[in-house]
Length: 162
Length: 243
Image (tube, rainbow over all chains, first blue to last red; front, top):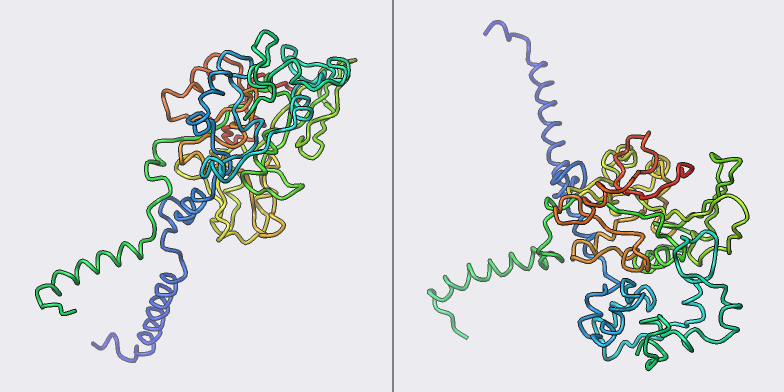
C-alpha cells in the first residue's frame, strides 16, 4: 500500500465530490416534478391539466340530441352545415342544465348582417346583400327563417330558435 | 364497534387500497383518449372565409383570452394589380367584429384566418430555457403555465406571431388547439363556430379523416415554408402575397 501513502487528502477530496453528487441527486429528486421527462423535456402532467379545462361550446352533437325539431328544419336548408353555436353562442352550461340555464335569442339584425353584408372581400358565390337596399329596414325574419332561410321554406316559425 | 383480529387483517389492506386511490386523485378527464393515436393539424380554406369573426369571438369565449390579445385572428388582404408583393393588410381588433365593407374597385380582396400552426419543428419550443413549452406526442404545441417563467423567448421566436404574454398570469399563452375539447372528441371552438366550414380540425393519423383526400386533391400550402417549421395549419387557395 505504499502507493497510497500520504494520499489521504486526495481521498477526502474525492469523498467531498461523492457527497456533493449525492446531495445533488437528493435535491434533484425533490425539485424536478415527477412527470418531467415522461414524454420529453417537459412536465407530462401538464397535458392532463390543460385537457381538464372546462368546455364552453357544447358542440352541435349535444344540441341535436334534444332539439330534433330544429335538426329536421335545418337539414334541407342552406344553413344545414352551420353549427348551432355559430349563431346561438357558447351553450355548454345550457346543455349541462337545460332547465335552469336558458339561452337568449340572438338579434337577427346584427347576426344576419355579420355574415351576409355585401363586401368585395367575400367569396363571390357567398350570398350577400346590402342590408339597407335589400329589405328596406324590415327585419330579416319577415321573409327568411334562420334555420332554413330559403324563400320557398315554410315560414311557420318566424323567430327561428325556441 | 368491536373488530376481531381476522376482520382487521381483511380491513387493513382494503383501507390501504382505498387510500391509494384517493391519493391518486380523480380519474383522467378523457379516459378514452390515446395520445399516440393522433397527430393534430388544421385545414384552413381561404376561399370559404367570409371574415365574420365568429372564430375569433368563439376562441376568446372558450379560452378566456383577454381583450386585445388573440390566439386566432383574421386578416383582410388587399392586393392591387400594380403591387402584387406588397398587400395592404388590416385586422381591426383581430377581425372580432368583422371588417369594413370592401369596395371592389381595383385589385383583389380576401380573408386569411391566422392561428398557431402547431409546427413539428417549432422554433418556439426549441428556445424555451426551462421546458415549459413543447410539442406533445399528439402534435399539439402547448405551454405548461406552471413551469413558464414568462421570459418571452418563445414570443420572439414564433415566426407567425401566435404567442403573447398573458397580462394577468404573466406567462406565455397561445392556441392549445382546444386541447381540452379535442381530447373529449369535440372539435375546436373556432371550427365549431365557423359558419362556412373554412376551418377544419384534422387528425393526420386517422386514415378515415377527410384531410388526406383533401390534401391529395387541392393546392394546399403552409405559411412561411422557407422557415422549415413543419407547420400543420394547411391553407387551401392561399395567395402568394400572404406572409
